[in-house]
Length: 369
Ligand SMILES: [Zn+2]
Ligand SMILES: [Zn+2]
Image (tube, rainbow, N blue to C red; front, side):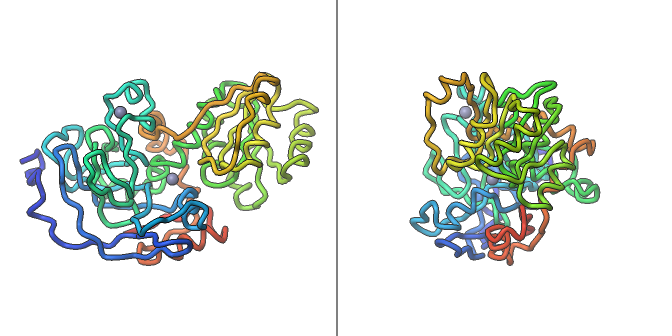
């Protein structure tokens, strides 16, 4: 028995079905009946999803850019309440409200110890298979089995009712990926006090990158955005300027704003050839680029980095690490990163959630089971 007086092993409790989103192919996401997850190893937890969301990276398979070989559960961002724990999990208790980083990690390997759990030796994603060969559910559903729960679960320290009443759930959910990823872009670009930073990409991650750059002390943040609503949120998050042009014209507009100079750092938050090219173009010699867009195209020229002494850093964000950094600011209301959610839908309407993001009718959609 655990401290909450509930059985640690819930194999006897859940034998039913749950509802969860499954992607079948391009523009085909369905809500289906799935087996209710249960504890399979002593390191597992079962979490009841309170809120999940659709990610820009979910749109790659949705749009057919990455192949969907067979139907699979989808979604990798969630907050929820711990319903059951395997015998080895002591970091949380049943009933705790937790944030899940978008990848699970062991907390013990060299990468984890160095603060890079996204590069964990045992890194496990949602909608995949864990190292023991057991399937892992997607986050867009009613419940999820979490392997490597000891290190992966991040308890918030307040009750579900309290957090709902305070309206904090969307802001906490943003720490599962987009806010942590935007912060990682700024951190990886070495943004520090007084810097001028250009943010390439006005999706939820780019907007979060604006916030991250300001938190790390940037004086001036130029957001590249062609959408009025996103540009407005970028300004609310601390952007001092907005550039709507792209490519050569975008570069000229940045130079204009900076009296002929370029930025100290750029955050690449899209993952395409053009966005990486823009990020590399807008930084001065000796400048720094933090990249967090899932790469779909860019082929980096080392010569280009060499000639202009550009430092590049980043990759998949270690969200688990940044939750510790960012949670106090979220709980105090100092930052409101959940403002990137501009639509909320029930899980039953998850297909519409994808369509709304695909058609840019929404920046980011929160999904409630
Ligand atoms: Zn994501
Ligand atoms: Zn690890």
